[in-house]
Length: 131
Image (cartoon, rainbow, N blue to C red; front, side):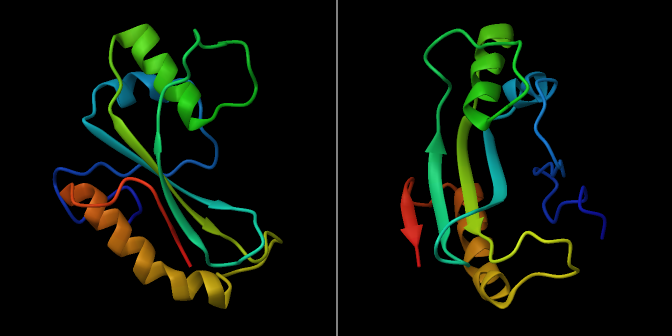
């Protein structure tokens, strides 16, 4: 199944290697946005789930680094609204050019899926670390 195909007709999945400001319009049209990413940290496989809010100041459109709070700020600044948003992040073990995922990340995928589906169902806790 291609990554863009969702298991739920009400869910749109976008796969991006890098965020860009052009996503702000699409984000402004959604009720919920969940950003799923890998991060660096001390404990490979650790999962975090945090709410994301728009930056308080007017967005800097002349930046080469786009993060999720900037995208939300652009959505509200340009289109008048931004959705409820969460960032799900899993700590990676290695970011070298290898095929496949490390064992700690593979072991954490069921919990990631559980958190993701709970967020979609609206029953997830809004901020929690998972070990």
